[in-house]
Amino acid sequence: MNRWLKNMLHNEAASGVLIFLAAVAAMLIENSSLEPYYNSFLNIPVAVQFSELKIAKPLLLWINDGLMAVFFLLVGLELKREFLEGQLAQPANVVLPVVGAVGGIVGPALIYVMFNYTNPVALQGWAVPTATDIAFAMGVLALLGKRVPAAIKLFLLTLAIIDDLVAIVIIAIFYTSDLSVGSLTVAGGAIALLFLLNRIGVKGIAPYVLVGMVLWVAVLKSGVHATLAGVVLAMAIPIKGETPEHGSPLHALEHDLHHVVGLVILPLFAFANAGVSLAGLGLNVLLEPVAMGIGLGLLLGKQIGVMGAVWLANLLGVAKKPESLSWTQLYGVALLCGIGFTMSLFISSLAFEHSGAQVVAGAADAGHARLGILSGSLVSGVLGYLVLRFSLARKG
Image (cartoon, rainbow, N blue to C red; front, top):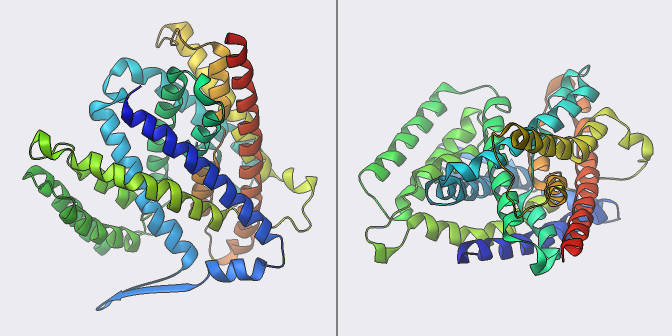
């Protein structure tokens, strides 16, 4: 296994543990006497002003709109590298994970719609159970130690990366508000400048980051979700240095961001968004349509969608299952794909941002969504771990 993959797995495992601890801490605090301090912390007003331009948001939205843009920058860098020189550069390695990812998106979405098709407000959360949390899924794999074959890790990583790519497209298409033509024009100019820098051979990171900051502000003001600026910036970062000795700007930035994103940004995001109040909640809340749709979408929709699509593709000869992987092991991976957690929480925060008459309904749906995400992700993770532990022990 190459050095990059080993580092990736190590970082993702550590990140998964921290994300879990941050989420547990958020839930404990939200359901304790410290709850007012937790919510006051998340609502601290933070304002940044440059001349006539002013951005004022509570801390929670700076985390969700700002820090998560850095996360999507890292996702974009990983996608670009994988498609140009990694596992996804070879078409034969892409087909099966792509098929699995598509099934893993359609399955959960259909289950969610089955429970919520009569409620137009709740229906906006259809994409919440379609996401997979790479860090958490790889963290569960890490608990199994060195017995996990490289083929399992590569398949899960590739499928999750493709899943992230689809999530980016979903956010761009379905979770945008009223658009500002002026801001979009500025954003378009910034994008053109980014790719011009790439075209004329600028290799330093600083010019790209500066233009990327302008792009982020423009996208934020445009009505399109600001995190997409991170993906666009990633696509412009050059993968080749001036000389082989100088190394790759993309690789260098990706390396620098891995620890920041995995060990700081994602745990902070989990801490800020996983605080679900359990006061007065019982089994009846888990049976609410939004919670049921998300929980069962992650638990059943993911495994049925991924396994069904992979099995059908293998049967029809569209793609072949790696000989080194058993069907039981693939089923364990399909279960791990049901760990939506941070990505699902992020999409949920977009889906249930409502105004006017929908505020109360949106707030209720958001709480039910978080409960569904946590329960579905937890059960999927535990079952995935047990299935893989059993299959690997039997093989050994």
